[in-house]
Image (tube, rainbow, N blue to C red; front, top):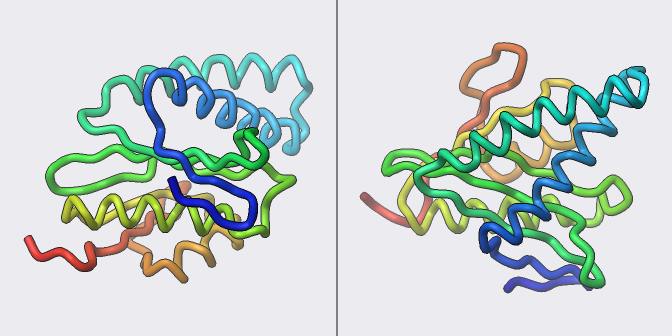
Length: 163
């Protein structure tokens, strides 16, 4: 467990912690969709459909890892990683909006990168190209652009371990 400024990072232990992570993902996606102007019932239906796919995708990962950020024993952020022998992918990272700007996102990405470095794999992720705060965080953590489609693709080479 890593702890700083009243926030503890706890390694995820499936399936209990994955259900907590799913609640965070669901809340994040609902806020995003509601923020884009969708009605609550439409947003809820879309999130329900997305979460079915998300749950199946998470269950299918050969190596799943992650960290949960807790403040006062309440989940306030999470990073989920999927790994193979050649790459680690950030499946999802998010921080409760009430806790953004407090360093929790940095704590989560640093924990993810340390884990990937220990396995000797580079890290890849996708981010909304309009999410300037997240892109700045990833750049400061050593990520560089590798491509785009509807998302910006970023990668960071492995550090500290030679393969």
